[in-house]
Image 1 (cartoon, rainbow, N blue to C red):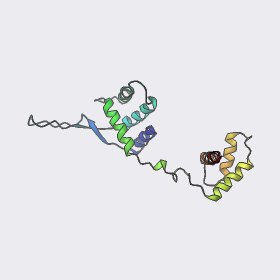
Image 2: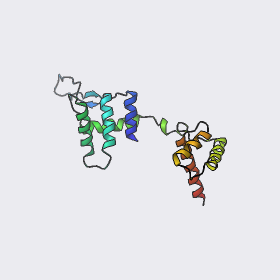
Image 3: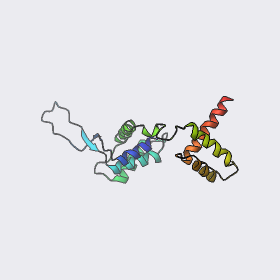
Image 4: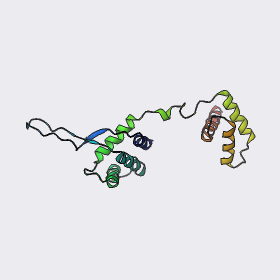
Length: 166
């Protein structure tokens, strides 16, 4: 899920600052701490990070080292990304992404009574003995404004609700 968000960040062209080593100011006094350098993530790096997060799932040994190596090997930046930078960027993107895709309206999860009736009618019209792909394609055609996937999801939700009542 987070990998999808990273992919969306790449598509949207989000480039945010992260601690790194690109801009450095000289200290005139020894008592001042050096200013952290800022590293902007490129689209290629974000894309590589998204691919690496998918490729190296949680629970693997030295996951973040592998992810940083993957990003660095793919992008060949002058200053390679550390595992800490990869973790920070991953967490930043995960927190930044709006949850629009999770909203029921965006996924077509709201069904009217008429749509439910059309779905039920189509389910009875096309028997389960049909090829599944063909059956759900035909059912979706009978319910205007709904995709095959939405019809299947709605059917499963209704079926589960009926099973839970028993």
